[in-house]
Length: 159
Ligand code: ZN
Image: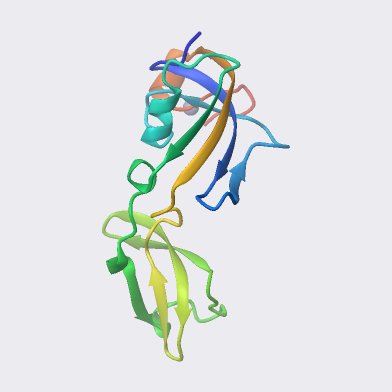
């Protein structure tokens, strides 16, 4: 069957950034399954998969506006060192889960100074063009329960 709203699709994929570096891949691992049309995938990828069938392969390039958005430099802010956990050494590249007005978000340490730390609240993939190479491995209709939950029940765990 072709992928449409409430199809469970199983995919193999490789995700690369604009430089061709692999960010994520199912190669050597398990394919992923998702319920189409419930907002699990980023919208641009979901649009590209609409109507595709088992065995089809596609390459999708998504600019930041169709993926994780453009970077917002106002989300790069220094905070006093004293506001961060004291027991850990803070180094560039570390990520924290921070709770803010819009729920929890991941912030990345982009600078460490003597008594303050510069945090970047942008999604790590904000501003990045994404290249997906996707193969549709299997499709089936979602069960009513899967539609209600918005995710796939593969029989191994209940969630
Ligand atoms: Zn469930």
